Image (cartoon, rainbow, N blue to C red; front, side, top):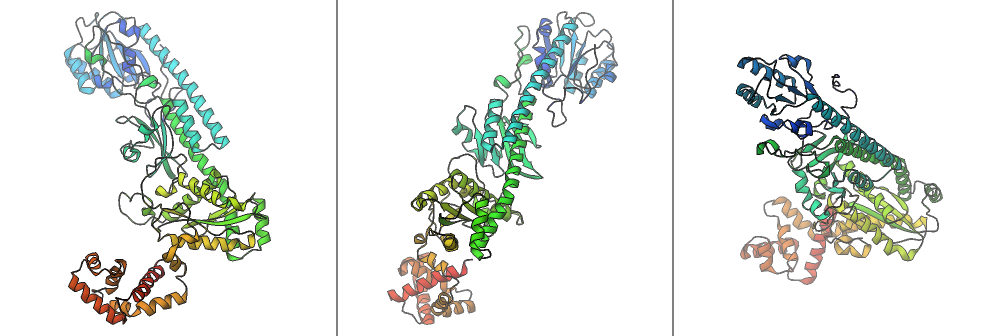
Amino acid sequence: MPEPPGEGGGLFRIGVTDGSVSRVFPTVREILALDPIRHGAPRLVAGEAGLDRPVRWVHVAEVPDIASLLRGGELVLTTGIGLPGDDAGLRAFIGELADVGVSGLVVELGRRYVSGVPRVMAAAAARRGLPLVELRRATPFVRVTEAVHALIVDAQLTELRATEEIHQRFTELSVEGAGPAEVVRQAAELSGCPVVLENLSRQVLAYDPAGQSAELLLDGWEQHSRRISPPGRTAYDTDRGWLVTTVGARGQDWGRLLLRWPGGGELAAPAPLPDPAAEPADVAPRPVTPPTRLTILVERAASTLALGRLIRRDAEGLERQIHRTLLTALLDHSRPVDEVALRARALGVVLDRRHLVGVVVRWRTDDPAADGAPPEEPGPADPEAGPARLRDLSEAVGQALREAKLTGLSSAVDDQAVGVLLALSDPAAEDRALAAFAAALRRNRVDAAGSRAAEPAPARATGAGAVIVAAGSGVGSLREARRSLVEARQVADAARRDRRDLPVFRLPHVGLAGLLHLLRDEPRLQTFVERELGALLAYDARHPREQLLGTLRAYLEQGRNKSAAAAAAHLSRPAFYERLARIARILDADLDSVEACLSLHVALLALDAVRTP
């Protein structure tokens, strides 16, 4: 018999990622289902839990010290004629086989053992978890070895062909610069299994149900995904039937790719056919790990996704820098307008003789934790969270422009916002273009948790979106573009105080609070606040326990209804009335006067605007 291949030799280690024996090898259970073995009327005596061990070779042995010649993973066949005759020797024989890592021991009855293997041998095998099988009829071992080795070679050839197709397919996708949705679709097509790409917040970026129900696949996905946590970068969760690999490059992981393989169907290892003479426990099904080709597939798909993200970022890096330079030049007047137009035209963005609209997209809050679910564990602020958050927003804006088939300059304009200068050929298309851009941005789910999705996902009722889209007034020349951009930035800042979830905020939407926010740096507004509320603010500074400003706010916000205001302030009505009288004296104002209260209410709104960054 030829020597078995060594560890890592030949084709026998294709696709191994964790140092274990590859799934290209058949298991003990599969070998027991082969006709040459079934001809011998096999009966499992011990070690049922080890039936799914892979067998990398079959070795026939009739000497007791065979363990020193083995490397692990072998199925040992013997008639027992050379085995020790004493109990201690049999225990030592089983122990040595288990120590070297053999996959199982098959003993043909009739020559040494007639009615069954010795009890001491069965007990030792059961104690070590080593599958021990009796063959109750004479069996030519050569037929067993031929069948098993043919099975291994055929499986290897099939695995090799599948692996070659996987590598070729994903190499083509990498060269073509395929997006995440296409990579996931190809992975699902090659495997015949549902595939999901998610970010680190367990939000679906792309998926393909492989002909199954998408609703069932994605229902309660975040909670379901958080329960899928197998160890290692690539591993199989046997309890939930998901093969998982981490997606990332350059030491920065950004997602996971999951393939659903529940251990059944065409891809599952064949279960042994029942033997009429066997006990029921001999053929009980057991879960198996996914074929090696699926591990290779998800890892190649993850590599393609990571490489594609790097290529897109690197390719867009210089272009985005130029976009930012040109937008900054328009805002700061640092370059002549003609030069900006010329450089933009070289980028493929024509700004001459176009209807230009300034757009600003920004986070509603400055706190990354407010974008979606709160962090699982509180900890120190991540210095990389802000730049990564802004980078994700910039990518989402760029993707929305492409999906809406719009052209323009786009780049970050500060630490929280991304600016866009849309160039439209038809002024009448302004509203339609803004609506298409906002819809594309919403489809990319930047308002869900700061990470865009490559495929639509079920919307979440989160109230006002985490992202604000604001647009300035359209202008007819590049020289006026700064006015539209500045207006869009001011509207975006003012809209942060607006709880409405409008697709696009324009100047008429900002209201009084928004107007005051726009004017918050105006000295005359600050003078007005001091004139109206300065005395009360000074009093509260001297008496921090009273805080009469809150009492005044409750009174004005309740429409001067004293009973409702007292309840809102959690004060008894006598105490509330006494506080109102004190406020009136401090401010020298008639709080029963509509005009006086209107002036104070505007001053309070202006104070909030001045205090809001």
